[in-house]
Image 1 (tube, rainbow over the protein chains, first blue to last red):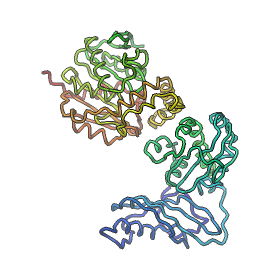
Image 2: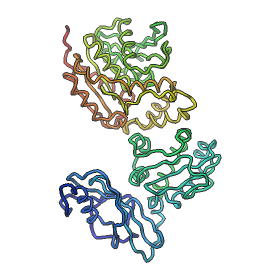
Image 3: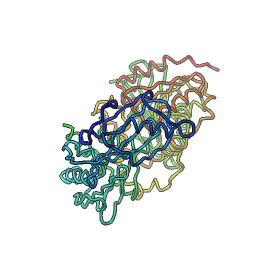
Image 4: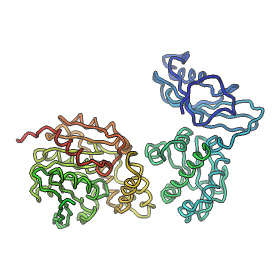
Length: 241
Length: 272
């Protein structure tokens, strides 16, 4: 889904995974020359502020901006210590990942939002673990594994502790750490889980996913990982109704 | 069913499997992808034979029903090119067209570099004239079972992802399952050959007609490399096919008619 920036929404009205597109004519670029790229990113950030009351508090940026439309996607929404945290990816001004903070009074996420709001978070991991633990394909494909699989989206990671095909824990960190961790930026995870087709192999071949830790065990669990990705996509599809 | 024949040729003391169909004057010589066999051309073979071609489909050494090479798994696509030229000589084919896909596409380009005057034309699918992928050098541990777990699963899922989105699910399943029957030592060596093979500097010397074909869903090739290759071969043409991945001869239901169109569009080769 692609929209255009309109009136600012409230935190609870936002939708993770939706694109907003901005034509270059709507960018108020304040810098040129050596700072042209940064000027484009900042102009886009100012125009694509995700919700009312959001304050930019983090920015990672690489690449250079070329004249053209800038697209933004909200890639994470979570609440930490009573503050709303939003992550946003900008494409078209190099590649930028923005973090916004929002003062919150109350916020109760809708059930449909839980599948995408905090990929790599412990809550997300627990929902996936519950699904995998009941899944015969996963239990069979991981039946000879004793270890933990880490799933990292941006800087957020959950580790699924697995023993003989059973997922016995989903936690920020398992006691012995992850045997291997499947890692990608937040935008890639969103595209993997919401895309019409399962693009995991394509994304991995393009280097958008990479593996940290024990590569041998990762290869050995090829089918288990494919089942895991498939079930994570299923959860998103079911949540969308 | 199209009448066909199958033979084993003794080449350097090892048996090579060759299947033929049709009896036309124009021969088409087909080379398969990494790890696979002439099975990939079963549909093309019948359709082209019905269109009046003599179709010759080989199993490269170590693949399908051909015995392995004496030297073990081959990681030099030029070696395969020489082997195919030997088969052409042994069968007495007069200026055949070549049709190859993936490593087979690179093999037929290699043959065109070496012997264009013996060919009527070349169609190379999912191939280009440079080193492939990251151009990786040999990884000796790659051929150790202890370092390569889950080859069957990796083959199944990896090749499934390379099939175009227009291909019906049951057909895609067959293509992926057939990859699970490979000797992965052969496949890995083929892939090493794909990565190393580089005829970039010799492409301008090709003097027979060349047409390059790439599926738009084939992320393993890098579509941008195909027109770059075509631009270096005098008179070469290229096209991308929507909805098709890495295996056009298995994915396109009308591969015979398309192949016929590609061949008839080629200019007549200059006989020297």
